[in-house]
Amino acid sequence: MDALPIRTLDELRKTPHWSFSSLNTFLNICSLRWAFERVYMAERESTAASLPFGRAFHAAASHFALCKMKGATPIIGELQDAFSEWLKLELSTTEKLRLDDGESFDTLNAQGRTMLLPLVEAWRDSQKVVAVSKAYSVPIMDGNGEQVSELPLIGESDLEVLEGGECVVVDWKTAARRWPDDKAGKDLQPTCLLYAKAKTAHDGRKWLFRFDVITKAKTPSIESHYTIRGKDDFNRLARLVEAVERAVNAEAFMPNEGGYFCSTCSYACACKAWHRKTSRATLSLAA
Ligand code: SF4
Image 1 (cartoon, rainbow, N blue to C red):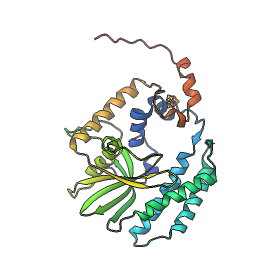
Image 2 (image 1 turned 90 degrees about the vertical axis):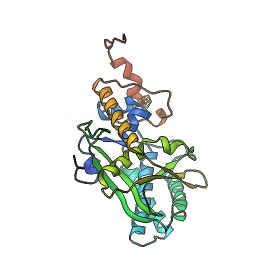
Image 3 (image 1 turned 180 degrees about the vertical axis):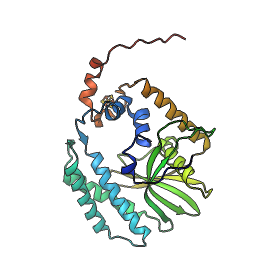
Image 4 (image 1 turned 120 degrees about the vertical axis):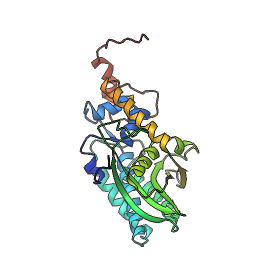
């Protein structure tokens, strides 16, 4: 089956789909959080400021890359001012915004403006921008060419460049600290986006993936982490989607309280009450 027609990510999100974000939440963050958001349609109790902050930062980074694509270089002060405006808008339109200790518009604004500096300074003019914020929707096929889900896989690349003869999908990440060396190789996002590239780019070229990670330190820095994926990774992605769909159909959603993610969860109260609303299922664990 050919790739579906390309629309914007916001349009693609309106119909049922799988995405990196959805799969990652289910597999690596918390399946119960996934269910509160996507099955039980629970009301959000709060939204951490990191979400609107990340959206504003991505808007500024995308604006910068679009200018570069057109051969222009925006003045850093103007880019920072644009970020401040996006941040103001994002914070004012985020429902049930939760500001943690020490967080305010001023502190977030100062942090974001400083984080734009390494992004701009480390920009390589040797790389040619070929796309910014490009959305994808592709069928999910296994290594035998069988479609494994009725839902498409959707996603968006932050940036696509030609760099030293290589085609590279780039994703900007803001992080509290530097990434360990093996993180990019294990991350599901390159698998999803490079799979989408493999299904849609018919020029036979191999694509690489690069995370540009900007730290939220007092003096932010940027580090690039390259990784690649191949057919076996794409087959594994298909099997993962199948396994997740089986778990969803069985309503096998569990809290993951041992992880790092409860402090940013928007469903903490619903989670506390979850076991009181769930009745005992009849299970057979016998072989
Ligand atoms: S509070 Fe923690 S365990 Fe509960 S749903 Fe949220 S992430 Fe999962």
